[in-house]
Length: 96
Image 1 (cartoon, rainbow, N blue to C red):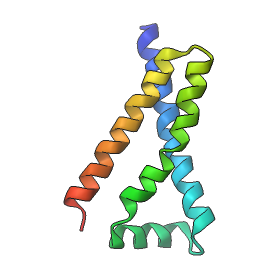
Image 2: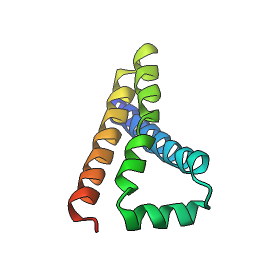
Image 3: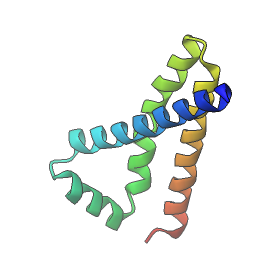
Image 4: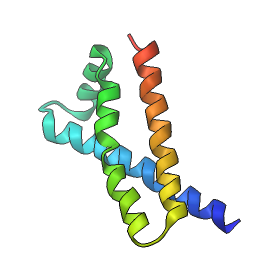
């Protein structure tokens, strides 16, 4: 039970880090609002790329958990990153 809880915490941290990373990328590098940037990225097929750049923040979470010896939480972050990769693959195959 404790192992599952630790992995869920890591997974949630990974999803939140990816979301924050994607939002930060859109806020920093786009002059448009978030909704406009999202719509344009979706129309032009760049949504997967934005998600991938947002996933870079997961590196900090992953190695941070490894550094403090929270291996199960790091594994949860890895699962969240793999889920993001599958979503990106889905966008690349079935998008536009």
